[in-house]
Image 1 (cartoon, one colour):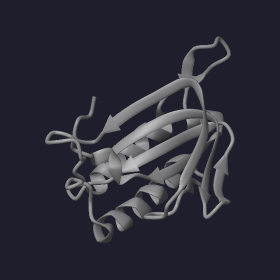
Image 2: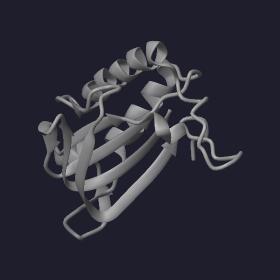
Image 3: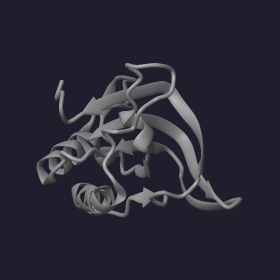
Image 4: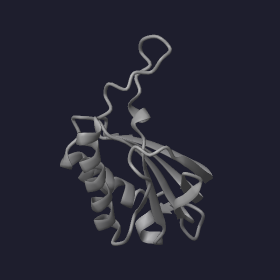
Length: 150
């Protein structure tokens, strides 16, 4: 699994010109799933995201998590995070999981993240054409990959 995590002031997912999901301050997570992903990847990544200390404490130091600050998370599936640009100019998405594998993993990821936070996680719609609007806060943007646990 690969995730791009953005600290936001607000974020929206728009589908068919209507707001589908929205959050105020919190995290926007763009999530890419590949065929080799498993429950171990889900548990590791959801735990990291819920406890990632990227919100300011009283001294202005990034020392608090989304969980500690009771902020929200909006997750959007994005197969293009697994694009390979090694050959030519047209990206290949061969590493991205096919829907029959990715959808159950995506749904399990959302449930696990809700367990980690103890509250609802907002989401886009898998395979829908979405517009994502956000106001990045900081900006703070972090990339995580369960194949390269840095």
